[in-house]
Length: 172
Image (cartoon, rainbow, N blue to C red):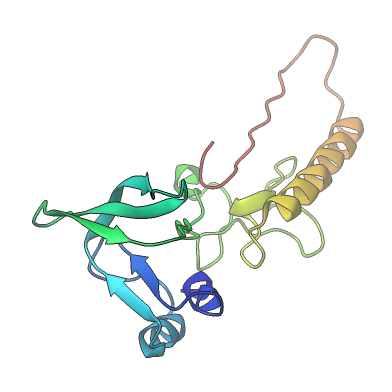
């Protein structure tokens, strides 16, 4: 919703192409989009293909209605993807403390979680910015905190293994 409203500053029309018939965005963000005369919502639809124009630029997309399977053309000059911000934390199954939105809770100003030696960084922990650059920065923080933790808790020679998992944009 936020991205669609922002794009109306630069285009005469913005389509939100949504695969379902409802939004998960906050009610206030939905209201802003619905109240914006430059935004049109195309429900139950997915982009099947993007195609070019005679000038070699984007000419439009083929949309498929997921309910009727009808395919239609939509002429447009720009295409932006925004896939939402639901953190990929379901695999944790209550092992780590999550906040009310499913993000991993960390000690403020750090990447430490409720489990000693487990650190969270990036999109699963940063619900405000969710940007690659902040994910890289918090990943660096987590690596440094993990290094300090390992230094303070050495394993006897030859015992144990270490594993690292990186999460970016909902993909492990």
